[in-house]
Image (cartoon, rainbow, N blue to C red; front, side):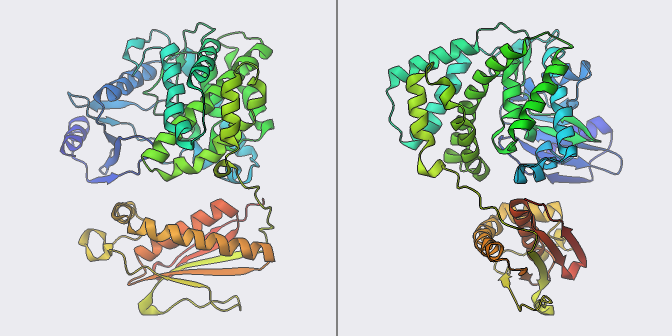
Length: 480
């Protein structure tokens, strides 16, 4: 932390007045937002100095080409610490949340998706101009070795974990055939490798690209497959086609392609990318115990399932194994029950027990009351006394303790059961209340997170009140 402080002071000529830890995702890097009254930046700590160096050198090259990537201001001599441009907190994945949940994307969501993929060819072609690919980590080029690493990543981190039997020589033979098809076309373009909506930040309405440190020289199809067939993006088929057409139109500025040939080659990469993604989900979910990767597995299986019939002749043993794997009960996504969510109103409150439990004005009498006082109270510490459960330092404090996450996991399950029952039976109101000592930290965090969780899952109308903070919020109905 001292080194990030030093870098900020060196770059801006003044010390940071606030340093807030940011929530991590899939990587092992640690991010902080450093700021004072005039300046703001993101500080990064990464154990892999080779990976950090790749990101920094790629970012500098892309900035010179005028591409929408974060500027890197400075770094430590050993590349363990660096300071980069703050692109805000809004990821494309969050911007398209309503569409992802409902499967119905509005015009604004479609336009930002199209705007994003229309910029991909610039990154692929301009980004490759005069780029020293030897800076790329861990490989300079997408080749047979990297393909086999990804396929074996899938085999050992996911397939073996499912317990599905396979004959290794036959599987490896199909892997080699798949590799040959993927590498048919020589390419001198930049392959982003993890081009998906979580790695696109939206700033002033424009997409900016992050986490490209794993990029290398490689074919253009890979990134198109990654973006449009991202497991949890939940894009409908007609929107996928619109995005492919948007990409092809932008691609024409750099290269002419035959549309039918392009789509045939793209299909192979979609198939391969699904296997690679499942390998990553297996490692991050099964081995590192990161829940959102586990939750993404059924979506990736659903994508893969729709591709199997196309390649049964090309890869007979692989497709046979994948068919058995996809039909495992744990991967079968339940058909979502279509509820009429327009009738139910949820009321969610945070409150102080000292001032009494909130009244139910619906006429139905009551609802759930959860006591948050068993968890460590941030209000006991001076630095949190003026803050609430909506503020980042308090959120970090509660989540790092781990108690509140475990507490809410059981409440989410209970709430889901109750909400679905009410939706099925056509009931009109349901209340959840969270109380703590002052109605300021633990209860506010819990009420806010339950409201966001249930709205994201069911699209229902929610009235949220942090009573003691005099804060009200409405979550509008999303028609399913």
